[in-house]
Image (cartoon, rainbow, N blue to C red):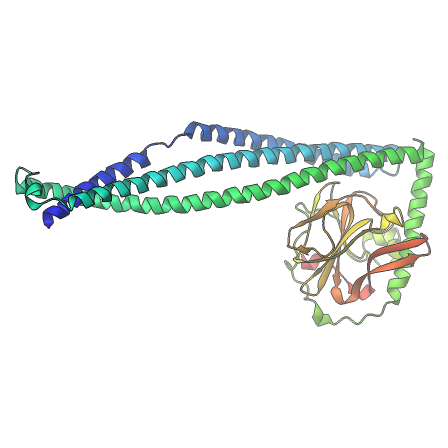
Length: 428
């Protein structure tokens, strides 16, 4: 039986040699993978340049917004916005290119790992088939293989060392299988990300068309005349102030019971930031702007304003359900929230995201923290592109359809008891 066992070891030596051969050998496409890595690196360098270009346009647009009280300033802002959005498209197309190259690279790596696994399994199968043949050999046949017993035992001792190598290769086979699973999972994630990026590209193309239409409408309305623009701007401000006064009078009359235990006490991190880059332009309450300009009818600012160039992705601050979306411009052009999204969260808080250029969320949709719900803009009453973000105690706010004496139509938007407005900053 010892001699028969020696035969088995001999064939295991064949197995070790086969596995070592296949694992040590490069399984094709190595040059292709290296080429793809170079292309991905090049794309990443382009990405950095494009991001730098976007930042420059955002800065220029912010500066131009300060002079938007003139017709030329407003046109300059729209022109810069178009250039920024066009650069956004370049960035998105770059991301699509990187993702496609990554998927291609992962597909090659997947095939290579699958080949390695197949070769290892084939080697194992071949070895054990030969072992089964060896089991049929007689003792005499086995002895005749060697000149003397000493030589046989030397061979057995050598083969025992190879047995250790065999175990190592089998362990490597398990690692290869884990690697294969991880590669396939990464490839699936990239494919899902690709669908999201392509959707963003479509959104950005729509935003460019909207921006061009806005410029055309502005030039048509003003007849490219500065005095006409100032008259339109004055009418817009008067309308907005009248609408805000009308709304405030109604909200001041609401007497909704709000249980202080129905929503969490302010604590940092309860809500996530609704933007990737944070720059606060106006805080909650009695800000300098609210006091100096006597804005908000003496009741203070009911949210936080963040700088956000048109087309910036706006993200949900917490899991929840989209209770409604709307556009106050349809009834009161240039007044209130413009395009808005309202989300009710599971912890007793609700949030609104206003002045959007494009709404992506749908009423009734279940939202996860960080989901893109829209893109920032300059709709409603806005002195420049930004995001208005308000937080409410959910018990004290609801979406209503209201007849406006100022605008002469029915508008739809979240309306709250003044006690329901909460300072967002302590929750972020």
